[in-house]
Amino acid sequence: MKVTYAMPRKPAPVPEKVPRVARLLALAHKFQGMLDRGEVESMAELARFGRVSRARITQIMDLLMLAPEIQEEVLCGAVDVPLHEVRRVVRHVQWRDQIAAWNSMHALRTSA
Image (cartoon, rainbow, N blue to C red; front, side, top):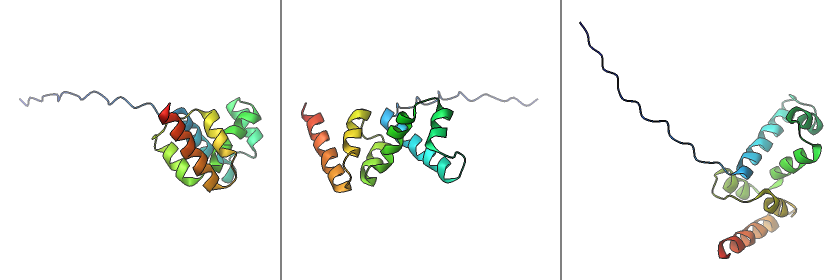
């Protein structure tokens, strides 16, 4: 007679909370991929699909205009910055200006 023993299971690791702005940036990349592949025809269709306003889709998609260095920092979850503060950075057209605004924002947040 063969006896088998059940190995004790390790509890599933608790996922760390991903900052909201990181989730929105990842969603923007997903939406852009859907547009590029022709899965949806427009941002208006994305809005209908997600049951949000066109303005909200625009706010999310604007995150793709962030400088690559900032996107990397956001996606790595290194920062938890409110969306309205990130949108202030996106308003700058030049990436060097975005990076300066980003660094300035961090300096203010850490000194407060």
